[in-house]
Image (cartoon, rainbow, N blue to C red):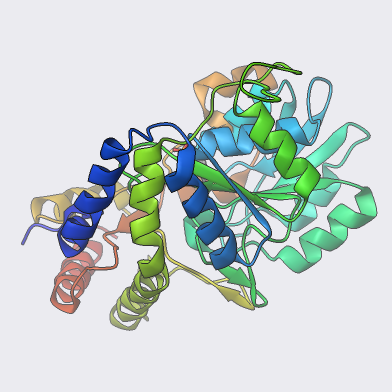
Length: 370
Ligand SMILES: *Cc1c(COP(=O)(O)O)cnc(C)c1O
C-alpha cells in the first residue's frame, strides 16, 4: 500500500474533462487576471456560504491581510489569536503593523481558549482571529458575545474550514470577515495559490476589492495606495468547476473520520479528535494524539502511509516570533499537544480498505512505541 496524506490526483481524474475545458476557456478568452471566471466563482462561493459578498484574492494569507487592513487594524494595535495555527495567521497581523497576542488552546477541540482570550484583552486590542483549526469550528456563540461586549472585530481564519458550521451557521459568516485559502491541498483547492474573504458588509467588501487591486478607483485613477493581491482567472475557473462538489466531498471527509473513529476508539495510547459541541467538523485534517509520536510516524512511513504533523512547533516558539518575548512553558496545553499530534491521511476519495489498513498499522505502532 502507498497512501499519501492528501491525494490530489484522484480528484483531478474524476473531473478531468470539465477542468481541462474550463482552463482552456480561460486561455481562449485570455481572461488571466480577475475577469468573468473569478466573478462567477465569487458569486457562487457567496451563495454557497449564505453570505452577501465573497472577494476573490491571491491566497489565504492575503485574505487575512486584506480583512485586517480594511478594518483599519494597524500600528499600535493588538490582535489576539491562537498559538496553534499555520504561521500565516500571525504573519498577516504583523504585516498590517499590529502586534500578535497569542493564547493557549482548549485541550479537547484544539481551538483557542476563550477564557485566555478574554484575559488578554487590553485597551490596545482591536481584533480576535479565531482559527477553525483542522476544520473544527470555534465556539462562535460565546466568542461573538465577548467581541460585542469588548467592541472587537472578529476575523475568522477559515483556511481549513470550508462548509464547517457552528449552530447551523457556516464558518466565515459570524465575524466581520471570513478568510479562506484555496491552496491546492485545502478542502476546496485551486491549481495554484488563491483565497477569498467573505463578509456581509458591502462597505468593507468594496474597501478590500480596492486594496487588492492597487487602490484603483477605475482603470487609470488610484485614490489610495493598494496592493496586488488579485485572483487569477485560471484559479477562478478551476474553483468554479470544483465548488458544486464541495458538499459531497465534505460528507466523504466526515464519513472517513467516522470510520477512523470507530476503528480507533478505546485503543490505549490514542486520543481521538473531539468536534466542538453544536458544530460541524469538516476534517481538513484528521489529527489524533499519540505518545511516542516520532517512532509511530516512522513506522507508518515504512508501511507506505503518508502521515504528517500539524504543527510540530507552536507559533509562540517559532524563531521569527522571538521579539515578542514568548518562552517555552508559556502555553503548556499547546506545547504538550505539539509533541503528540499525528495527522492521518484524509481526503474525499480515500477508500474504506485504506482506512482499515492505516488504523491497523497505527494500532500496531502505538502498541510497540506508545
Ligand atoms: C493554509 C492556511 C493559511 C494560509 O493560506 P495560503 O492560501 O496558503 O496563504 C492561513 N491559515 C491557516 C490556518 C491555514 O491552514
